[in-house]
Amino acid sequence: MFTTETQIRIHYALTDQMGVVYHGHYAQFYEIGRTEAIRQLGLTYKDIEAMGIIMPVIDIHSRFLRPATYDDLITVKTTLKEMPANHKIVFHAEIYNQQDELLNTGVVTLYFMYKDGMKRAEIPGVLREKLEGYF
Image 1 (tube, rainbow, N blue to C red):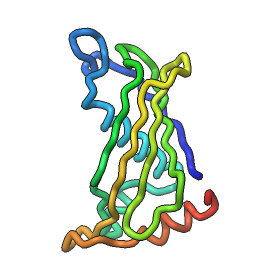
Image 2 (image 1 turned 60 degrees about the horizontal axis):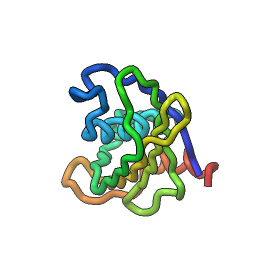
Image 3 (image 1 turned 180 degrees about the vertical axis):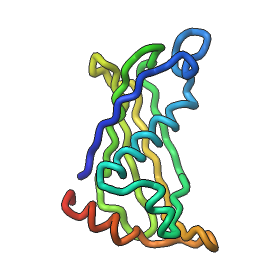
Image 4 (image 1 turned 45 degrees about the horizontal axis):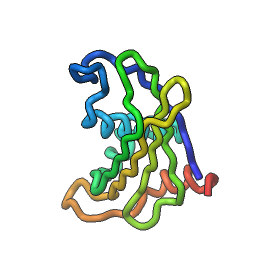
């Protein structure tokens, strides 16, 4: 299993009139967590795209337990529970506030696809190699 944590400060533009984070922003929090998880492996999305591989989101689920509010410092815990197989990768997210209360959970599935032709691709070898030690 591979897990990382990324902190994000909730700024005013992320909240609604009640000072609560708008639900649509959680997909961005998941993306920030995924991006930083890949970065902690020594890669970036830009590196993967330079290999001719893109990673579109094909499925997303979100569960809201408690609100995040203006000026909270949230922690996005991003986990790969299993080694990516074939053409897909599944990220699990948990979002906590600074009191370590679970606010939200999410599951995001992405496909590896060739940029040219938009056909499914296998997990890039360099990413597989970097993940193998965790599983």
